[in-house]
Image 1 (cartoon, rainbow, N blue to C red):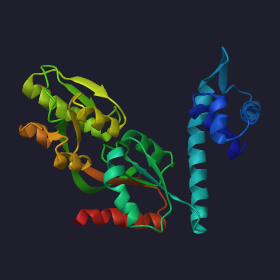
Image 2: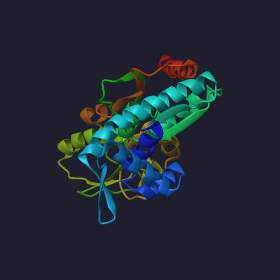
Image 3: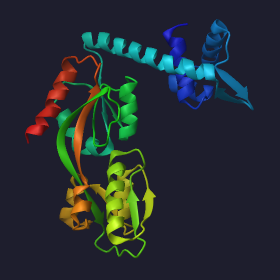
Image 4: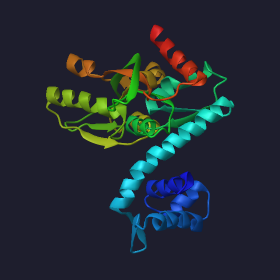
Length: 287
């Protein structure tokens, strides 16, 4: 068994137990992927996948191996990164949720032009998982991080507001167009919306999408109201294409205040590039 065997096995698992998709992700031939899995099974005399109706299903033994394999491949990737960093060739793997990727990340990258970034933009839940699996070095998020293994450094406050087209006329069952479950913005939007529902006794209809641009387009077209970071729609508010419709109720307004955070694994090796990025992010707290 080699690290390559484990990496191929994890690729199959992460691609829906599909050899075809794993081979595409790894840029290798399908027979090579099948052979690696078969060699693991032969070495231990177990089945990692059940093969039913031309599909693969992970066995209990396969699930157990997947847990260990993730940790081992993650540690190997970190070792590989550390050695490449010593040679000055590794990118800094930076994660950002959709809001922080728009509001904070451009400035942080501009202030660190010598850092070669590899950026992943996804929701807070995915970022937390990627940090725990050593697939990201550092990230900036707006949502809640649950794991005690992740260091969280508060950076700056952000405010969510209700926003709608000036021409939008809501009825007794208004439409709210929100981010998808798992995003930091959706987490807080639900809190605000619940506070609004208790106050107004109205029952909103909720649409959801993972694309903030789509949300803004739908709202501008008069399809509903959204709950969004004020910092993302400053230009639209100034131009009058969107209006701030946040209720005056303090419970609703106060529940929309959140904190942007810098996060990284507590056991992460912090090299010079990462320290520089962290220091730049922490400088935002001085504003």
